[in-house]
Image (tube, rainbow, N blue to C red; front, side, top):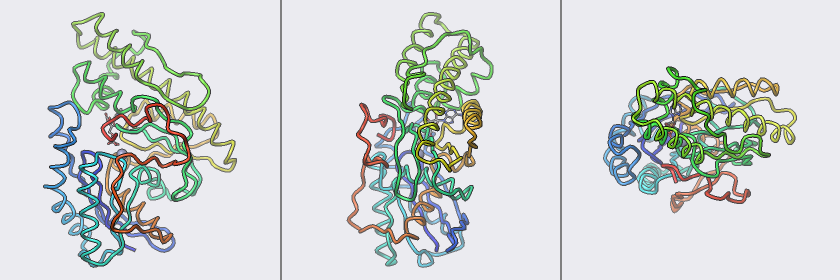
Length: 357
Ligand code: KG4
Ligand code: ZN
């Protein structure tokens, strides 16, 4: 089957076409991502209204490019999958309404996809991974461990109680005078710095469970920077390195707890998957690889392009759902908040205070 996917939940306008054979073999026929990052950079973060307007202006063209690159027309598509949440409501409405209109026009089913499920199932497309596996999703809007048990079956093992990790990187960059998005800039600066110079806190380290907290670390970074201002280039590099050292310690510790908890329910599983924009960070990947190996797990990290926001993952999640006969009615409403694990009681703060809240 051939599925058109549409992603507009944050600041990427994306469309993609994938094919899924009946034995589950995937082929990416096209993958178009129009990043709005330059439109938002001057504001130091995503401005929801600007994002929604840009999606309106760009989406027709992006869908057209995805079809052209795939060498197909709309009537060749078996279903239209679109992100229906969680995310910025203006953007979600643009993508979901467009998908509904196409579905209606060509009489094909609509699949309303949870953006997090898109991230969660990507490793099945890239690595043909079997269920169950443990996922760490770390992006600008989300930081959580999920047991991925089956399509539509997820259990949250831990999540942030305040900022998302990508958001913490972005805020750290802003206060150090580094450009947006902050993650790559902080990582680059950290390479030139001394991670031992500033003793920054590691919130929740060694506490039971696998939850995260980053707001105290962010405050400590600000106080350390203010105490030695004005900052030289080397100060910035040392602060970035100290921040990243604290983050990697936290992520490693939380990962070891999450693996132990996951294992208790799934003795046969052996894969830790990392997804989301922060998965591009080499220091974090190395830490996760080490913690996974200690527990006899392997780390699966899809290519950076498919870890960050894209429509291939939405098309793929749509195809996985369609293969199980799961489609949605045209009155499906977009959901700004939509946890994958509906059973887990929401944590204080919910861990979704980022751009995608
Ligand atoms: O998944 P993504 O592209 O979009 C969201 O869903 O948020 O993730 C973007 C986030 C940003 O906060 C960005 O600063 C962070 O991922 N990021 C990084 C790195 N590259 C991107 N964080 C740390 N190190 C990196 N190399
Ligand atoms: Zn995402």
